[in-house]
Length: 273
Image (cartoon, rainbow, N blue to C red; front, side):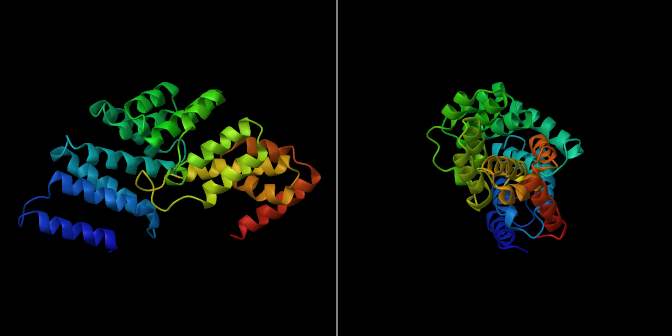
């Protein structure tokens, strides 16, 4: 049993009469704390599934708890983060995001997850309007604007954000902006921070980092290749190949030196290095 789980159980024991169910606030707070620590667990996915299941079981008697709804939705997002695009968990997450957002329309953190699930500029603008000081909402808006080609708008959305290390994809979105601006050095700096400069505990519980890390590898591969550094580019392109069309194109059109480095990188990945 983890320290967080033990603390949660102790909290339950002190806050309720014998045989009485824990209050909704206690359950929601305990699950939130467990979710925050889930990225440190031996099996994060199993822990998050258990948290999602417990939150779902509690919803019928705590339907008006915004915190419980958020924890449940965030757990679903974390589970979908590492699932394939056609996975049932991804579909479940997207449906849940819409339902919960409509139930709690004034919650910036729930609206932000809905915006991320749809990658929609309109949804992201709504989330940012609900919580103008909520950093994840601004990053979500910047990401959606980049997808639409509005680099200047994305840069404005990111202006003033100081704690990117506490966000799921803050550094990756900054790297995307730098790459769009033609700043190769800045791209490498920001993408490396996504891989190595994130805080263990962030603004949102858990760490939905699979897509952000894959995008960081893509950008590092492309940026190092542009600098003419095949040995540095190859490992990142190989790691991004499965999810990134840009990485696959770079591998297909690689120079002889980069092809040689890619072959070596693939062998290293196969060996688990």
